[in-house]
Length: 255
Image (cartoon, rainbow, N blue to C red):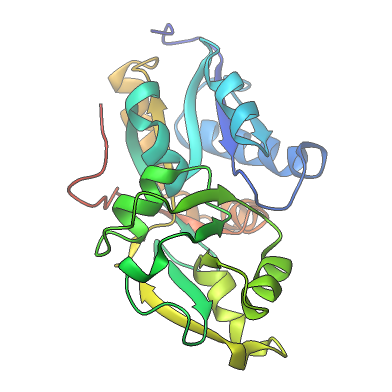
């Protein structure tokens, strides 16, 4: 566990989503400074890093100073047990909210049930998190054992392949699904099942590396961060409206 006055690293990791560390760093620095000030931590005691890949995020989170993780819910599901992630707050993402639904899209008339997906592949921005796909996004379906799940951030090209009749389906998040109707080949595609509302993103303590009193001070600060106009602008630069207390599904993995 880090000492009360130690510098804490917050790792932002969003596998598959656009953006690079260089582009994001000034906004992450501003967020870290605002959060530390609101929590009455010493200046400079919270730093933030961005990793765009699952492997990069895991590498950063293995470091002892990485006491906090800000991750999409699929990443949380996939790695909560191994990393001992304890949810601190849940993000309210601009244009999405605190929860979103995931939708499985197939070629029209091609998939009628889970059983009919034998031999298919599911591609998704969350495809690195197979447990999330099977147990949360598609929890009402028992997929055949030969269904393959893989990550792809090239959603448009994958949807074209689906429309062309390849044995593929694509699992879309809320933002991606909202754009589906605008595609010129949308009439060739069909939503076949949709998840219950699921958390969008979680900020969690990693492996109890932070004293509980310090974590509680940060939680209180984050919950109130949007109440300040200056801090609200800092949040907006990260496509955030604020934070709420965690609202995880009962079966979500926790330490």
